[in-house]
Length: 403
Ligand code: PMP
Image 1 (cartoon, rainbow, N blue to C red):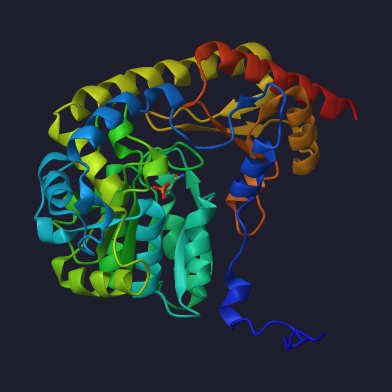
Image 2 (cartoon, rainbow, N blue to C red):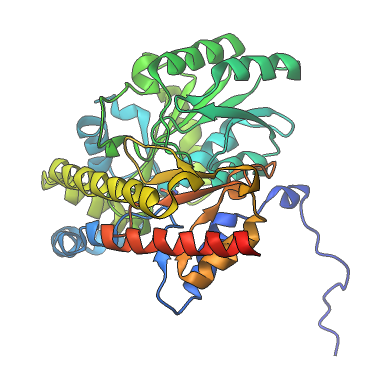
């Protein structure tokens, strides 16, 4: 019997073509399917033991009541907005804060508010491709700008924009311990990015999930501070890396004149952010334990980053070069030498077979560059496991060279 369903192609919107898949997620699901012992350098997740789960259970007992399970205010729970504005980062006007479902929703809101189809959007190369995918989903044309140890190459940015013959609508940057390279945008370059954004009337999408996880060196003021809260700065933040990614709680710090637009956009999207999760985060901050927790995380990740560098030196030596992040989760490895470039998928599969997972460099470039590189997350494994993982990576690399 006919279902009455048309048999032709589904009437998809043109924008469905712009919804590119994330290699980050497909590698992650591949991992979930693995049953054997595997060292997980792939996913950018916090150390499981660093998630304050028992504190959350105690807080839930205290703060959840029947009202926790109905709709909340679109802009977020007032106690969380207040805590974010007063106690995290640099204190700011609470009218600047809108709570979001993780950092990703902040990036999506930026796309919704600022990007029309065909707009030019600057991205770092390599970059966090879920972020560039958001810009693509709004029809952006991407302009990839190279990086060095001081972050985005701002001279190249100026040159490429001049060559493009049009100015960018947005500049997407991850200023601290960048994902995937682990490098940090210098103060001088931040100031130049602000200057260029003002000249071009471009919004700076300032995506900074790792800034509070600096374990070495002096902090560099962020875009809101350096620009004196210029309305062109749209900052996206998250609790995913400092508390727990499964809670899906983040925030946007933006000009108060954008507040109503953000609320309207969220009402058309998800009405409000998960209320019980916001209560857990606000409850956790209210205990006063966040500063100690962050100190603990910095110590833990400093130790793991050092372990990663030592193991890379021991097992891979001159075969690779690694970035040396001063915080965050990631090292970026480049395979040295003319014979250092393997088909990325081949090396990835050999590594998986050896029992170590990472994300191939190509996953971080919409143009498909970086076949000679890979991202390693040092945050979620102990120093012993890191050493074992790097040893396995060295075996996989040997096998790839032999093939
Ligand atoms: N931006 C960057 C640079 C990230 O690394 C991540 C998480 N991997 C996000 C945004 C998304 O954060 P969330 O999980 O809070 O959505």
